[in-house]
Image 1: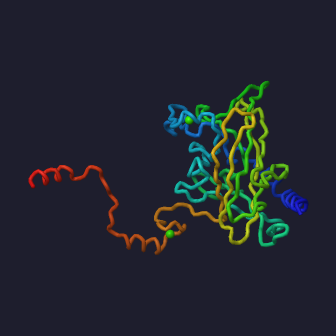
Image 2: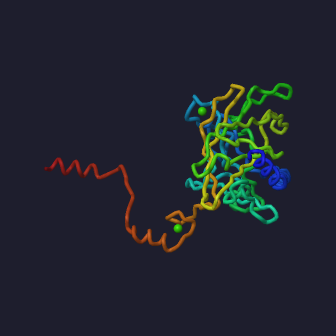
Image 3: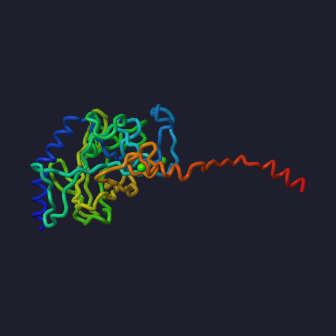
Length: 306
Ligand SMILES: [Ca+2]
Ligand SMILES: [Ca+2]
């Protein structure tokens, strides 16, 4: 059973994963990376000048790992950075079905489930489907952030640092069976096939960064039935080398259809229509204004004269 499953996955992904890899290599600058860094509470003081000034709300987590999305300075910045979310918390990552010769790929042993992956283009300026956007979400990279504050130890060309970063699958959403989620390396090796499994990232000398780092491709795959409109996986990052503390658990949500925030969509269903207008009419004239500068002096005078 397990062997046939793996054979099926390997066979069906041979063409798709390879084409994705070619695509990713052909647009090397436009792959959206899942970033792995340290010091989750550090921020530049002003994102318009990220090289100057800093805020750090917690000095005790400077060696703690974290996983984050595309930072605000990137042309494919994630609206809800550092999470993979829209600015209002709506799901951001879109799943699309894998097609082989125009047909959906069904799960071995369960023909009600079909294979989906995350492979869409997005830019901050033009949103989903921008041909010049970044491919989501295939790249994994160590952080090379502003002022180096999120960076793993750099080492030098002849001395690799001691860190060894592992990605761990904690759990998947309750609408998935344990084997409904897996990740594939560029060579089609499946990883993170069960809760508690880890994948150790390779360590590479990145001449452009003048540092040792992580730069690899690792693809998300889900077997989904018709009712699985949204799924999630909980991941964490660990350092087997002992230099960094483990990250917090990160929930990454994916959906077949996402609802982009748009002005006027008061019920958050993705469409501005009469139902939104009804909400306005039913609440017309309400005021939510509140000021701490109340009529305190008047009250005092009232009391004084009673
Ligand atoms: Ca900190
Ligand atoms: Ca609406």
